[in-house]
Length: 214
Image 1: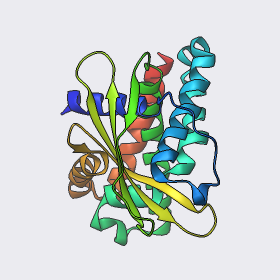
Image 2: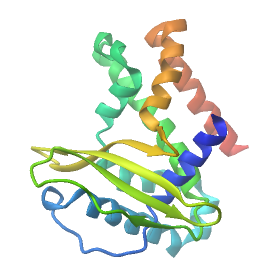
Image 3: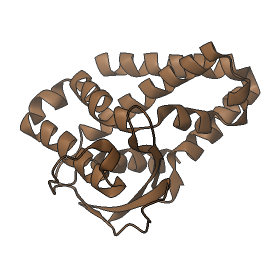
Image 4: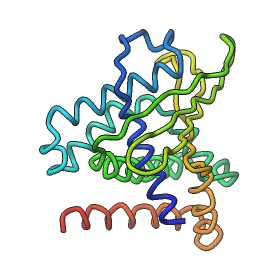
């Protein structure tokens, strides 16, 4: 599972590496597959412009992911789905802490994989969707050394402020990110409760910071 998840993370990072430039569009009018391509160009080209600096300073990659990618993620939905039914029992403070720690975990993991991206490319497969769909699946294929990897995004259409398509799950090698974390989190909750899960995430994030400094 650890090996599969590592490939998952690296492939997810590569997924922001598409090499076809599309003109920017208003977020609310932008198709989901075009959004994925635009993010790909934005992030990958930014890193390529100064690869040495991003490799030397993981903090720069974290900041890039946080500012460019995370605004296009429905993170509350992702966290609630990963935590599972017990999310409804969480207090507002617990929900905030869960989102904060889960976000740090994902951003750092994603950034670490993104710093390893080299010559991989991605192609976007034709999307089967109608104009009034509120949720869509964007399928992509990552190509590089080794066999091509199929990567899929689930996105939802949001309204109001910040309207547009938001990512809420990823699938690579048949493994959905949210479901993978849900299994891990359920074990923590069953053993130690919600506060135990929060403490575990906090400790893991602190350990990751220490490992980077070391």
